[in-house]
Amino acid sequence: MGMHYPKRFSRKTRKRRIGFRARMKTKAGRKMINRKRAAGRSLNVADE
Image (cartoon, rainbow, N blue to C red):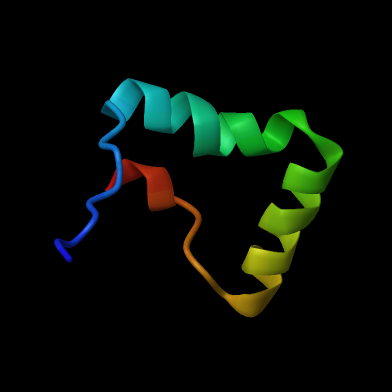
């Protein structure tokens, strides 16, 4: 069996879907960001 590669989203789509601004729009997203901040994680994951 061959390996399955995930669908490659464009950077714009990725930013809109899981970027910082997208997280800040929802209550759950803000909670997630605060959890990551408390753990000392960096938040610019979508920039990579």
